[in-house]
Length: 340
Image (cartoon, rainbow, N blue to C red):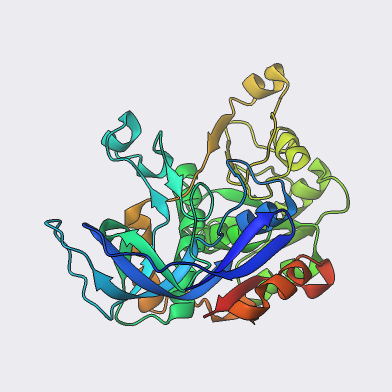
């Protein structure tokens, strides 16, 4: 089968590899669509945490089941089903898994990060990690995981209708956060360095206001966007150290901050300021199986329209050539997807 391997930062190689073999409690899927996300871009640039090379990228996947191994696990899957793949392979045995925190398993193995992912014709996946839909297209199925990150972050923040929510970072994860914050009828402001992304969010109705950041996000700009108030919830989706550290100065007293993006380093804060505001600080990692199911239901019901998100496309043979171009600001990429 064809496989794209990231040998080292900036170095993709298209090569032939062996097809996966049928295994107990696993299915083999034909990969149809691969969403390119920030994790992939960071790996390409050489600054992705939890990562080693060489690696096959790809964890936002829309696929078709081509075979199912023997299993006593209950499931309703059949050959030919279209599926979204939950790429977080958890051990089911650690303290976190036993408590239902499958997304942050102590020995988690994320496809495309810790082990080889879906930039290949075929992939072997545990049956329990496949979420089928009879209605969604492969494009839509490939966006379920991205949306799951946003949904999980909003659940972590417990966003409510009376909240003033500031989302920092208007990439695909920020878009997902905005989507589910809007479902909560929160007062929503999105901040980003890129005007085209802010215009896109406004166009599809996912913000009440926006802030174009020039250098550093300042308190006066945030207050102006919230009619003099500060946000009761800040969700930072930048993975930028300076942005994340700055959040501590922008939060309303009694408010909550959620860091979705991450970087290789430490976040520090001035403790008296942290205590004065009685700040609640949360991280958000991956998402849960029920998030996948909820998102599939919402897209099937027409409550989420993913079509405008897909701004750029490439095919398998052109990935190595096109990938770097998607990183250029002038490309104005919202979401790029690989067609197989």
